[in-house]
Every structure is written in structure tokens, then in C-alpha cells.
Image (cartoon, rainbow, N blue to C red; front, top):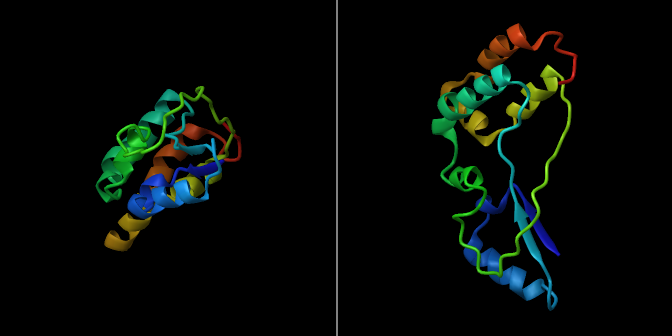
Length: 137
């Protein structure tokens, strides 16, 4: 099995797909998957969605659209196998959430352009509704 998680849109697919075919064994499986925004509470989710769409939305690379549509519009020259739906579940503290948001490529690019971290503005809004920032949600 060859897997790519949350990164297929970064690869040069014209070069990568032939390599998948070359190194795969007969009946091998190539699995690519991605995930969307995390969920906490309706109020927090709305702030994260607004941050994603409006604050850093213009700073996402063009390939981000493939994540948004769950890779359904990405060229895929292999037999598609319907995978079962699965979920990841974790409880994070507010500092962990803010740390994760800081890893987004759109945030990094926003910082390059504006010389300021947009996560800081979001942190102020989240702090007012999160409660104890060390409490995992």
C-alpha cells in the first residue's frame, strides 16, 4: 500500500502517478485522503470557519480547492475503491488549537505578506468563549 495523507495536492502528479505504478506490486493499493476543518462547538466552529474562509482564505495555495472537495475533482488514474467513512477525534486545549492553526500554509503566507500573525487576532476572540484555555475540548 502507498498512502498520501493531506498532501496529494502538493505533489507533481504527472511524475508521482507513474512512480506509484512503478513501485506498486500487483493488486497494490494507493490510498490518498484528506480532512476538513475540525469541530468544537457551534460558536467556535463559526469563528474557525470565518478565519479559514475570510481571514486567510485568499492566502491558500490554488491546490487547497482539492482539500475542500475531498480530492473528488483531482485527477486519479487508478481504480477507485469506496472507503468507509472514518473520523479522527482528539481533545485539544486552546494553545494546541492555536498551534495547529499556525501550521496552515495560508497562515504562513499571510505572515509573509503582512508581517503579522492572523492567529493572534483569532486567539483573542476564541479566548473569550473557550473558557479555561488549558481545558481540552
